Image (tube, rainbow, N blue to C red):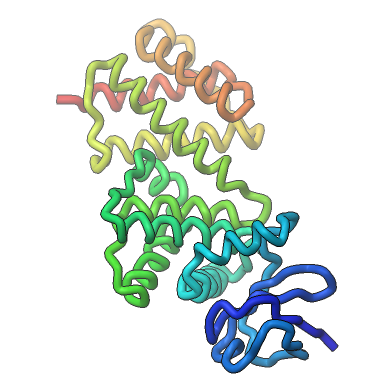
Length: 278
């Protein structure tokens, strides 16, 4: 028999409990109604979700966390995670729950205070992680509808990274680093070619997709021969030099080695991108 001892009532639908010296949040309709601290829940059928909360933190740190979290946010996060699970056909890593709760709670508090949410890597995130971005859009619509608050598109990008980081062994930090890297690369290209890239243009999207293809091949050791390499180095010297510099940004960020054949492909894509500028 599973026994959960209530440590704190967060709302009628959310309680903080302990089971076998591990802390959980339980979410369920009416699960906290009429209950008090110390009450024992035995095999509660009304539990929709549970997860270990802030593992490794002290009792005081738990209290601080919950004192700053709106229980409605916890309910909404669980609904979002359930939606993501149904859409993907796979569950997210349990460790993503607390991070997502903390992030959404913080973001909503900032919005209520009139602080603008800025995401300089939004376009890159949208292109690099389309499935997660689509789910994040649905999550934001859920939050808008249930919390009656406007949430900007910038927040969609941040939620997409959280969702990506919750899938399997993937890392939100790695996803953010990739988005930052793409942003750095685009800024470098703009500087070197004295151009302004329209992030809503087809040319921009095509370049990002091609670059992503290069990264996928290199990361999976599936690089292909570039029979045009010698010609590229001879006729596209400027593009090849910029592509070489880009390869160093990639190597430093992803800790991978970029073969010259793939640098040649980047140079070709740069030539196409540069030729489209006004």
